[in-house]
Every structure is written in structure tokens, then in C-alpha cells.
Image 1 (tube, each protein chain N blue to C red):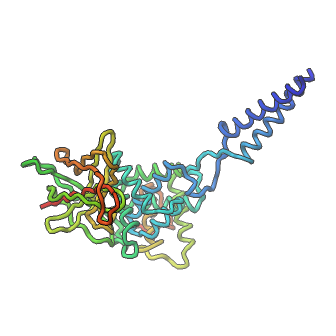
Image 2 (image 1 turned 180 degrees about the horizontal axis):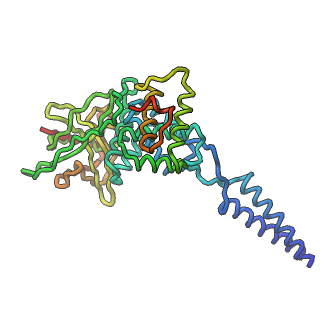
Image 3 (image 1 turned 90 degrees about the vertical axis):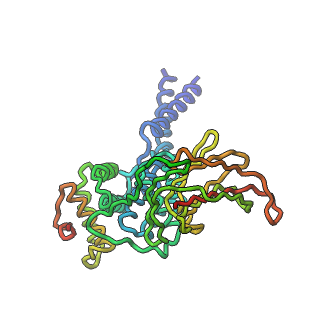
Length: 266
Length: 125
């Protein structure tokens, strides 16, 4: 009986002590490192880093700040957040700042030069075009270009886009839904928002986040056999179908098709 | 009675052991917050907030961000950051670049918060 009382007392006391220490009054750290922040706070800090980068144009400083968050792949984590916020319909200015930072981090950091500084704030790019009635089924598109200092410049997005080419490709690697946005002269256009939808899901991406593949290039990884529709943001009436089908590469390996849409503004 | 004494004694021992495990041996720490960052990391946050403010001029957002760092009265925090930034320089920084630019951003934000300091005065337009 004494042993039972001792064991019961010990177990109950242990439970109470652990419960208090873990749930009622857990350890609170002070003087913590940024890498210890919870995910939500890290996302806030990433947006702040992008906003600061938009002001000072110092890409190496921005990279160091992202790295201080414990994120090794600075470009990857900023790109992921950009896509997530774009998909959730977050504030456009915030998404654009993140997209610009993602492009700068993943692009050609050594070529990046600081933007001109001035005492007055640098206004966000506002090259938007007022919607006008569509003369036909041609999609209308408005967007704000993403400005990345030092990277190859992108002409302004001025309005109408037309689907000018569709290609089905059989390449090694993942099946990609690729979008190229360009001017009539063939110059890539950065910052064009693309919406991809499938049964039960939707995602968004921007052109220009993979500058190594072209300023106007953007892509989305498709799952084989799933039917996707792609459209440019703000052009809900013009959507195009894509599906990754099995194919055989030139080398004889079995892969899945990528689909490339080229949109051209006149 | 003896059993009750043993029960209470072991309850106390168990509670002490539980607290030791929960606080020392295997703590389950609450996630770090922005307000718990080390001072130099907070300075970096303040610099970024000032830079963002210089671009978007959104004072309520800047105040909200400073509040998340635990600065209910942001003015002194901005001036403290400026003093530490200045103290880290061997020569007066150029307002157009690097730390001088940071100080210019801080001066603008401090002024917007109705805080004026001799430290930041040279960096106001």
C-alpha cells in the first residue's frame, strides 16, 4: 500500500510538473537568433527584407539577411514565399518586391548594381493599363512590371497579350507548363502573372523568376495525367489546356511532355 | 496517515522532477518571437523597417513592425539603433551609401515618429 501511494504520488507529481513546465509556463528564450523565429515571423521578415532591398538595392546584404534566417537556399525560399503570397492574393506591392528579390538572388548577383538613392522614397512601379473592353476573344492583361536593378531590363507591359505559339516538348526531367511572355520584337517580359488551375487546385507564378531561362520565362511543374488550364491574370476569359502525357525522349528514355505557351503583346 | 504523508512527499518529489525535466533537461520552448531577438538582430530589423518606410511612406505599417519588435515607443529605439550604427563607423559615413544611407532612412522614420535627435539631425534632408 505504501509503495502504491509512493508510485501514484510520484507519477502524479511528475505529470503536474511536466505539464506546468511544458504547457503553462514553457521556457521563453531571450536574445534569440533570427533562425529560431517561428515560420510566420520568418515570412514577415522575408517581406521586410524584400522591402528593404527595394529601397537600397543591395542584393548581397539582402542575401545575408535571408541566410541569417537559417535558410541556405536564399533564392529558393524567397521564390517559394513569392509564389505562396501570389496564390493567396496578397498585396501586389509585397509580391512584386519579393519577386524582384527572388530574381536578384537567383539571377546574376555579381551583375547587380545598387539603384540610385535619393532622399525621397522611390515610388513603386505603376505601369498599369486601364482595362478596356475586349474587341474579340483576345485576352486583355494588366500587370505591374517587376524592376530588378542590374538584371537585363524588361520592356514595360502595355496591355494586350495574344497566344502566338503552343509547343509540346519531350525533355528529360519534370513535365513543365512553360509560359513565355514577350513583346512583338521577341523581348522577354518579366512580372507577368500566370494562373494555373486543375481539378481541385490553383496556383500562380510569375515570369522572370528564372532569368537564366529568359527574362520572360516562367514555369510550373505538372503531374502526369492531370488536366490543367492556364491563363494570364486579369484575363479570365482566355484559358488554355495543358496535360503532361507520356513520351519518349530522343535518347529513348520515357518521360512526360512539357507544354510551352508563348504570349506576345503587339 | 503514513500513506498520505508518503503520497504527498512523492507528489512533491515528482513535481520537482517534472519541473526539472520540463525547464532544464528537455525544455519545450515557446517559439522565438521578433520581440525576443538579440539586440543586434533587432537593430537590423529597425534598419530594414526604416528602409521600407523610406520607400513606401507607410508609417502605420512601420509602427506596426516596430511594435512587433517590442518597441511600443519607437522613437527611442530608432535613435538607439542610429547611435549604435554611428558608433560602429570609424569616420562620418557618406549619406548616399552604406551606413550613411541607413542613417538617412532612420532619420526619416524618426522624424515621422516625431522624434528628433542631434545624432540624426545631419541626416535629415
